[in-house]
Length: 271
Image (cartoon, rainbow, N blue to C red; front, side, top):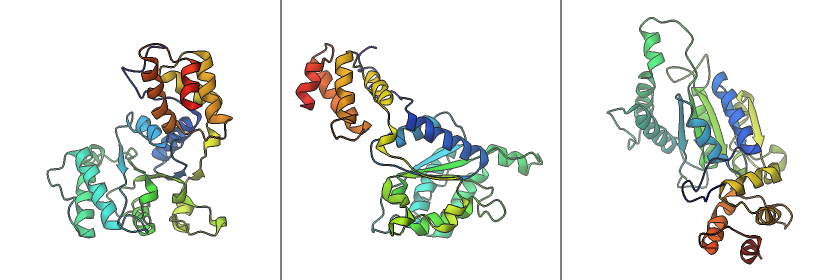
């Protein structure tokens, strides 16, 4: 495999990426709700980007932290959704700075109403609408109130949007705490009962094969070097953090000074 200088971060079809994409695909087609949590560096955002890049009717909102420990408020989330939809539909009225829930929701609904299939239905076409999904990345920053507000967009019989919307909430572990732990989760019972899946992923779901493919995709071809990196993330009491690997491997390439990354170079960095 050539050096990683042309494409330093190619997509790698890991076990976790395949799992997340399959859940997103089913949720999208069924206009459902999915909740997926997992630790940093396992490839959640990468999987979202790979999925959304192939889907015309998917909007991704990368949630920004709110100003309180409770998470981003409903208004803050609606502002972020408004901006994402305005970017998607190129709406001339950009109202993301509004502080009114009603004004923001009105702008969101107007944007959604410009969606081509919905316009066709308004013009008399009575076929079933194709699915439309909003994915919330970094969903751990959402407040419980915001998620409870958003869930009504998914209801087929009581939706507050022009048409029911599929919703995907994907974030870090604190986002979807197991109720058995005795901690309050931002995922309410009402959302759980509507979700097709509520799942927690872990570093253990990343296999040695996944790590090998990932290292190879970053331009490391020496078998002993690959084995040493994989061992670092599987047998040396280190978690299989792909983001961490994505930061260390370029250092190895720089240390190789244009040559192949060898096991000696890897050992000099990993120790």
